[in-house]
Amino acid sequence: MTSPTLDRRAMLYFGTDTPDGRVSANQWRAFVDRDIAPQFPVGFTVSKADGAYLMANGKTIREPTHVLTVVYPHGEETTVTAKIRRIVDDYKRSFRQESVLRVTDRVKATL
Image 1 (tube, rainbow, N blue to C red):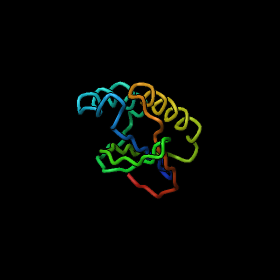
Image 2 (image 1 turned 120 degrees about the vertical axis):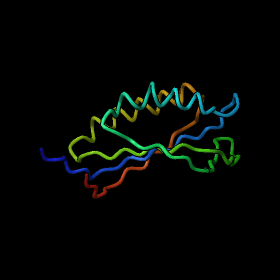
Image 3 (image 1 turned 60 degrees about the vertical axis):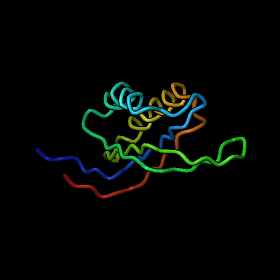
Image 4 (image 1 turned 90 degrees about the horizontal axis):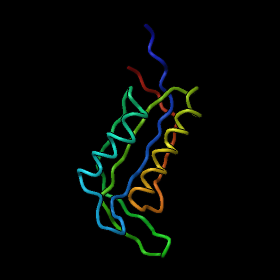
């Protein structure tokens, strides 16, 4: 069986400071299990980062951040974009976030 050529990467940056406090480890884990894992059953990576964000009110905040990385074939952009849009919308709604940063680039990945 030939593996697909994985040549696209999407990275999403989820800040954890909310108007109600910080997204807890349990809340994040539940979000991953409910909203991310079903969208990418073949696999994904989540890592922790320290981030800074300029809010709409002009204040810059520093906050713990989760980075989701998904690698996928060129022909799946439309499908992956729809999945990412759902994940971002769910996160923003669930945790009252202004935004989730998305970075997409071309890569060369092998299995």
